[in-house]
Every structure is written in structure tokens, then in C-alpha cells.
Amino acid sequence: MHTVNKNKKLLSGHFILSLVIIVASFLLLSPNYLLAQSDNTNNANTTSEDITSNTNSNTNTAPTTDTDTAEEESDNVALNMLNKELDEKRELIEELGKKVDVYEENIKIKQQEEVTLNNQISLLQLQIEQGELDIERVQEEISKVSLEIERLGYEIEDQESSLVLNKEVLASYIRLIDRYDQRSYLDILVSNESFSDFFDQLQYAENLESQVGETVVEVRIAKEQLEVQEEEKVTKKTELDELSSKLATSIVSMGGQKDYKDDLLLDTQESESKFEALLEESRQEQEAVASEISSLESKAREKLEGEGIDLNIDAVLMWPVSPTRGVSAYFHDPDYPFRRYFEHPAIDIPQPQGSVVRASENGYIVRAKNAGLGYSYIMIVHNSEMSTVYGHISRIDVAEDDYVVRGQQIGLSGGLPGTSGSGRLTTGAHLHFEVRSDGIPVNPLDYLPAL
Image (tube, helix red, strand yellow):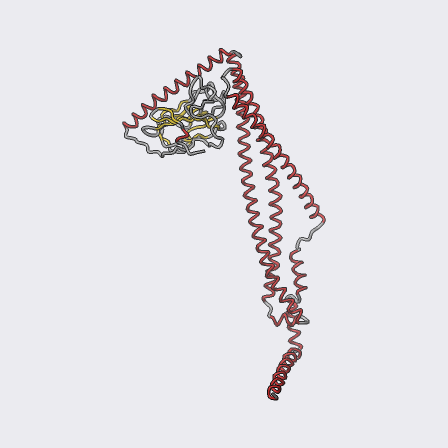
């Protein structure tokens, strides 16, 4: 028992002695050494407070001034006005869209009525009024997209400023960490008056590294957002160009419809009998075209067989024009306005006047007929069974006896009343597209990709 107590006293004595030696060593360090260490630490950061102050001075290289504040407030006011104007544009566009839809329904109803001169004039008037509304809507859409581009400009400028500031903060943090890395723990210990300050400064260094990581993330996010905004701006500018092109096309279409209405009144002199004669003339034109197509198709096949040419085609044809606007008249459509005069042997695909028309498959150009203001069309034979016809062509870009490949441009669409290639009677700008099997018209939708 006495031995244990004695050992405890010895251990306690050794511990105290060791502690005294450490403290004494620290206190008895050469004054010159302490002075040298103090000079070294003065060249670096001395305390966490000094470093904090240094960080603030680095990250605030562009202090906020009254001018900066005024500019920021001005930008906020401008941005708020832009957002308000955009909301008003959206509401107006939506309202115009609803009015256009009402006209669309009234036009469909009118198209199902008996074909008379009065009905045809009324139909044209509805289409003209609908076109005027659509032009107004496109103009508002152009204005809206322009405002969206302007707003993106403000957002991009703000994001660029944020990115620059974050990069400056990051650079400051990196410089401070580099200065910390050049100091030993003993340097930091000597430069502080107490162990508490020493540990505070070590903790500050750890926090500094954490802040660097957070700032790096902020820089990356700001850069990604800036890239997204720049891409969106490019997309909006493309949309603006497309809307401007659509507007120009719509204005031309509107002029054509008004001219056609005037011509129709002039030709018929508001006489139903003269209008009936005009319809009969159109029926005869359709029959002549159908007979011509049938005859040319037979001769073309004989020629291809004689030359040993067998064109291989896919089972599915490609759309000759974009089908985004759907189909306005179907194959043997019961609602086709001229059905009592002739069946509709095709589908009508609504398309702005002058849109590119492409070959639905590889083939041989049998007919490329330019009829002036009459019915212009292109006919392609694809193999021993199938052929396609593209009607109401306003411009022909191929020649008879040419071979074309799938997707090749063959002309421009038409169908606008009173324009080149449209014919005597037409329901508006569209492509008339026929598919024939062994010379007999079949439903094109059976051979095209689903809408």
C-alpha cells in the first residue's frame, strides 16, 4: 500500500517536472529568436482578425458608390417594367388566339355549306378577317420575343457581374491559404498571445478552406446559368427571325386573298350562273389533269422497264412539307367544298406560301408542269406501282426526266388564291399531295408517318 502511494507521488512529480521544463523552455527562448519569428509573422498574417480584414479589402475592390446604387435601382425599375409589359403581351396574344380559333370554327362551318357565290365570298371574307387577326398576333409575338431578349440582356449582365465578383473572392481566398501554407504551427503559435488565439486562428484557416469550396461551387453555378441564358438568347433570336418571316408571308397571303376576292367578284359580276360556269371550268381542268397524269404514268413505267430501272423505295414515304399544321382536307373528304363537282383525290397540307416542297421518295420526274396562274404540279414515279403528285406548286425546281432522291427540294408550295400555280379555285395556301398505286389514287395517310 505504501509502495503504490509512493509510485503515484513519483509519477505526479515527473508530470509536473515535465510541464515545468516545457513552459521554461518556451519562456527561456532567445529574445532574438522571438524577434525573428515576430518579424516573419508580420510579413504574413498575424491574427485571424488581420486576415479577415485583408479578405474584406480584397473582396471589396470595387466598393459600392451612390452611382452604383442608382444604376442598380434604375436597372430594377427597367426590369420590372419589362416584366409588366411581357405579362400584358402574353394576355393580348392569348386573347387574339381565342379570336382566331373562333374564326377557324366559323370557316369550317362555312366550308360545309353548299358552294354558292355568296358562300364563297363570305368564306373569303372570314379567311381575310382571320388572316388580319393572325397578322396582329404574330406582330405581338415578335414584340414579346424582343422584350424577352431585352430581359435576358439584363439577366446576363447581372450574372456576369456575379461571376466576376465570385472569381475575385475566390482569388482572395486562394492567396490567403497560400500564405497560411508558408507558415508552420510554431510560427502561428509564436505570433499569438495565448493558446486560445492560436486555436482560433487554426479554426479560421479551416473555415477559410471551407469558404473556398463554397465559392468554387457558386462560380460553377453562375457560369452554368450564364451559358444557359446565352443559349436561350440565341434561341429567342432564331424565333424572332422565324416570326418575322412568318409575318412577311402572312402579309403576302393576305394581299393574295383580297385580290382573289376582287377577281372572283369581277369574273362572276356577282352572278350565280357565272360562278357555276367557273366551277364547271375548274371541274374540267381537274379531269384533264387526272387524265394527263394517268397517261404519263403509264408511259413513264414503260420507259423505266425498257431501261431496266427498278427504283427501290421504303415502305413509308416522308412528308413532303412539315405537317405541324395538320391536314385541312382529307382523301375523299366528305366536307370538301367542291365535292359535288369532283372527289378530292389527295390530302391538303396547310403550308405558308413559298414553303420548300421535298420529294417523298427516290424517283423519276414524269411531269413538271408550270401552268402560270393555272394548276401547276409535279409528278414523280417511284417504282412499278407507286407515284406521287404535288399540286399548287408556285415554283418548280426540277425538270422532266430528272432523277431525284428522298428529301430533295423539288419546288415551292402555293395554293394562295390568285397566285402562280394555284389554279382557278383553291381554299388557301397549302400543298395538294396525292399518292397513286397502279395509277389509282389512294389515301396518302396510309403511306406517311403518323401525325
